[in-house]
Amino acid sequence: MPAAEPPPPNYDETVVGRLALPDVLERPVGWARVRTAEDREDCRRQVVALFARRLYGDIPPPPEEMAVAREPVRGEPCARLTIALAHRGRRLAVDAALWLPPAARGPVPVIAGLTFLGPAGAMLSESFPIDEAAVVDGREEHGVVGRRLTEAVRGQHLGRWPAPLILAAGFGLALTCYGSWTPDDPALWEVSGLASLLGPDRGDAGALSLWAFSALRLADALARCPEVDASRIVLAGHSRLGKAALWAAANEPGIAGAIVNNSGCAGAAPSRRNFGETLAHLVHRYPHWLAPAAATAAADPASLPVDQHQLLGCIAPRPLYVASAAADLWADPEGERLAVAAAAPLWDLDGHAARLAWHLRPGGHNLTPWDWRRFLPFLKEQLAAG
Ligand code: GCU
Image (cartoon, rainbow, N blue to C red):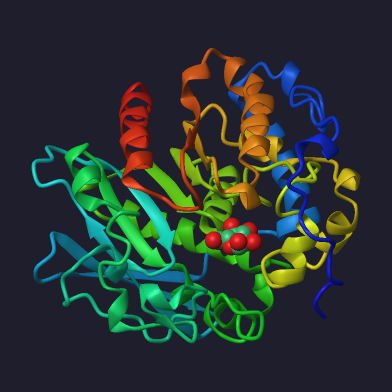
């Protein structure tokens, strides 16, 4: 049952009121008293458990088996990875693309992302297959027809995922289509893809948790490639996939860092701020994204024991870049800025302030080379600094 229609979004700062976020150093766990890496890890686990129970549902554990096959792609400097999962006798195989910097000496750091259009959206070559089984929420002008990818998606997201720019900065790039793992469709997400593979082992995971699971499996697959430095895999995502990247990186301390772009509600924007999209809008329009328990938070965000700045804090002291866009009011850029500021003490604790970054791009909801020109020097500096 879709939730009741919420009131229209508020875009008036004067009616938002004072934002009372839980103090990141004190609540709901005593980060301020953290002395060792183990204490910090213990706090992270407790905070993640609260987010799982109240919003996203737990990310399921890895499947029983995973195999990765690899083949070259004609006309594009990338490899096709086929990630084959098996669990309790059921199977799912999903494609990803891996671009590697040609001049690399030794294993490289890799930026890994789930995307709306999949690998073909980020290349002009016609040799990478289009996943006709993927179900995505995309626009016809980008080649998505009736939630399916068509040949017309090729190259539509060259600017969102600019492989030449990323490779020139010394990073590998790995992309997979989110809809190949779990359909972005309230009628289909529970009856195909990962939900079918995992069966009851899916637990209470909503689609965002399943996409987070997918990002983590992509990272596992990359860790098996000898050219990849498994200790420097960064998750990146735009919008709903920025939410998933954030949730995945918060859960898995082995992920080296995250780039969370225009992620908004249930991403970097505080749930307690009534500006732009709220949890009530989200569960109404996308009833499959969060766990069933999120209905309570949607009705009363102040009842949550945590807010999104604390999810950002679960990535500390790893590098985190949160990016907002000035005209993307639905995603509440000012709220994202406030959440980053409220999370900052967790990086400051042991002198890692420079590993947390935020920017406000002029323009609307998108991921662009303008953003990448800022992400890449940041990641270079922070990942090399170890
Ligand atoms: C919708 C949704 C957002 C989401 C966005 C996207 O606008 O309300 O929460 O981030 O889609 O994924 O593009």
